[in-house]
Amino acid sequence: MEKLSKVSPFRLSSLLRQEKNPKLAVQLFLNASTDPSANPKPFRHSHLSYDLIISKLGRAKMFDEMEQILNKLKLETRFFPKEIIFCNVISFYGRAKLPDRALKMFDEIPYFRCERTVKSVNCLLNALLNCGEFDKIKKIFVGISQFANPDVCTYNIMINACCRFGRLVDGWKVIDEMRERGIHPNVVTFGTLIHWLCKDLRLNEALQLKKEMLRVFGLKPDRFVYAPLIKGFCEVDGLTRAVELKQEMIRCKLGLDSVIYTTLISAFFRAGRKLEALEALEEMRKMGCKPGTATYNAVISGFCKDGDLESASRVLDEMVESGCKPDVISYNIILAAFCREGKVKEATELFEDMPRRGCVPDVVSYRILFDGLSDHMQFEEASSILDEMIFKGYAPCYANLQIFVESLCREGYVELVSRILCIMAKANIICLDVWGLVISRVYNKDKASLTSDLVDALLVS
Image 1: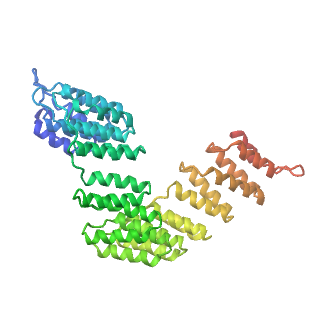
Image 2 (image 1 turned 90 degrees about the vertical axis):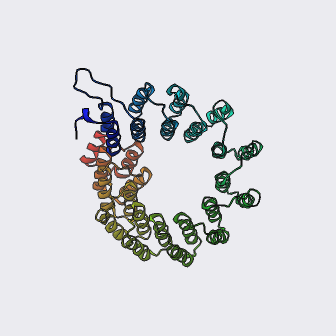
Image 3 (image 1 turned 180 degrees about the vertical axis):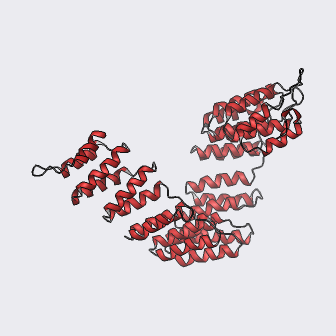
């Protein structure tokens, strides 16, 4: 790397853009002014370099360092910072659930010699929405005229806020206010209301609104309007209507995405219409929509619920062949199905094969296999999985663990009970209920069955 004293403002921006490590980037920014001469000249950071470093630190959630750069920016006199910088900062705070910092940044924008417009107001409203601060949103909206005139985006955020906090009626009132102010609703406005109506399963109202947006406002519904409608009808067993909406999308050449096809495929399997589910998958390919992991998982789940584990396993192999990497959910679905069907040997083999296939088992994988082995009285194997699970820092489902210990006691596996208690004691997951269960089941007047290991485990805990 060239000497810092030779770095120009343009070169610094290029270096900041290339630097992936935010900690190194901030050092590069702050030390760019290093000059070994007796009378060093202050380094002139460009507006772009400020924008780059602030964005990099915000994305990394290095907020203290970001505010250090902002304080430096406040002292700049060679240019006026653009509003987009502060909009980004407010958005970073919103995503991090820091509403007070977002509000503080908005209040301080004038100190940077930058005028607040509707853009920064909208960013603030959206940030507060992400933080769940409805009262603060309302307060800002009521006094918005002192900053800017609200636009359609402002109202869309307010409609989303009203609906998210269960005030759908207020959402309709916001639309009325828009029209009174001469602001025309757009597709996002109706898409937001339709989304929340569908979420509330008020599907007939949502359909009526879809018709009105075209008939009254001349707005053509897009796929973001159709998607919640299709999902809603699938949830209430309205598959026929969902398919009609899908066909309507095709006629309107809207372009179906994998989310819509996945929703339909899952619904077809739930309804026991496996053939139509597979036809939807084939249609998806013909339409040029490549199935993703979620789509394949829906097919695998459908086959598993239908008891067709052979087909589910074939789909898993098909995913790999098509270049779509199965995720841990793909494997967990089949693991659970194997265990439900009592095929714990196949489940164990698949579990052990997961790392070779490039997928590391997660806590759910371990719980599924442990429960399956326990349910089918494969106690030695289950205890090994439990030991490995705890060693890797995964917590078992405590209720199922108690059932497992009770089964061991009932079947007379005293030594195995001792081993399990030692494992549990090391992980500090034994409670009085378990001890009471073990002592009442294992110890009796005729035979003191508590081994020394069991007593040691009690003392350790």
